[in-house]
Length: 239
Figure 1: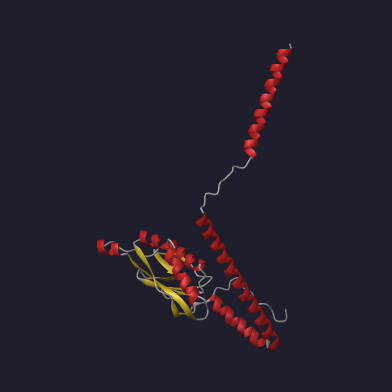
Figure 2 (figure 1 turned 60 degrees about the horizontal axis):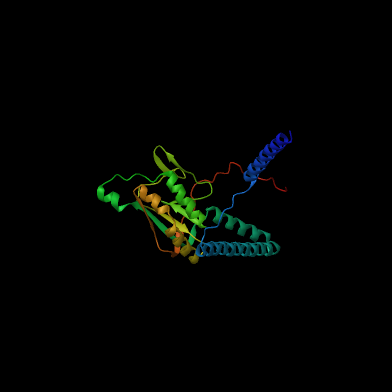
């Protein structure tokens, strides 16, 4: 009798132990090892340090802008308002940009020209990827084939043609102009685009991405179409 009780008790303990072990392995987070070497960690640290420095610079510029605006408001509200309007028009793209930057040439790849392949237009998806890559590196102004890119710019396929601001862009070759805040930013933009894998995506489509050297002065015309103000409402005077 006692032997039977011991056997049953042992079986119950085994079952309970097994259930606890299964539950523990289920909720326990798997241990992951950091397989990066010292140089990879140093590179990541350098990237984070650079990002921190850029953020501090942006904060400093914004603080200076706020201080300047407050002084102008106290001295002359009208001048402050006109200066604000001018700055907003520049940021939106309604004013001509003239400053440092660089140009990118989109042209057929040498291999495609040698074998006589037909060169298709750049696809909207590929152009959007390039514009996103440029904006990721903090471009101040962008022009594609003479068409200024602003916040409301639409890049789409219309009847088999790639359009920017509802205007068709021509087949390669054509030029993309990029304006930057400073010449140093233009050099950074050049290096970052040279290191970017975006050129491989163009090569697949029989296109070649040629990045020009940074320039001290580059001119990008203002947006010359009407701006969509569908969701803007005028505030009555006195409110």
